[in-house]
Length: 225
Image 1 (cartoon, rainbow, N blue to C red):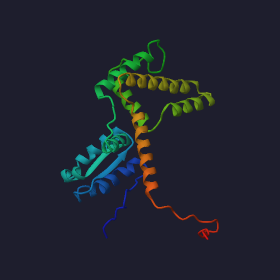
Image 2 (cartoon, rainbow, N blue to C red):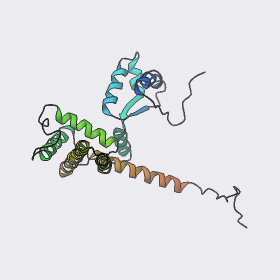
Image 3 (tube, helix red, strand yellow):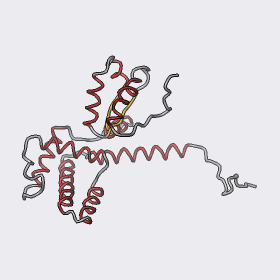
Image 4 (spheres, helix red, strand yellow):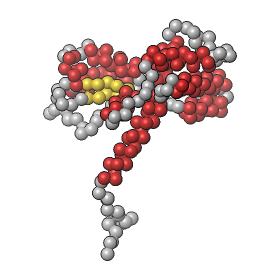
């Protein structure tokens, strides 16, 4: 009996080593069968996206697989949805984003100190920091979440970890200022715009539906006579 697909989507969850073979064997195995369908796999980080694409490239019949599958992060998917609605997010191109992060690093460590201060000029630090900041934003970890984690470390009496989280907050705030100064938006702000658009769409959809008859606590429709 053929394996049936749900009407909308399928959720895979569990330890990734166990999931990887399942994804390669089952999810990508469906891609390309129906040229009218696109199978979109959302992953939590760009590193995982690149890893899966490399695995996908080693699958026999890869041309047909690539034709029917897309692997993207939640941010990539949000940008795609916004563009579909005619909204084009003003994100910095990679080279200018690297320049903004470099300026933020220099600002943050100008007075010395900080766990990353000693390695901030090391080659490869800026790209690594950019990837980590992207992962934080794609995971919706903003100022409030970082501050909460910092406070939890203080409550545990772990001053070193509290200082590390405070350092991340300073770095993130500095990058945000640099990006906004260049007339662009951070990923978190673009995410927020996508969420607002989705909420508006849900409200519009619900308002167009016929009203559902109200029921009394006994489970029977209330009398209208």
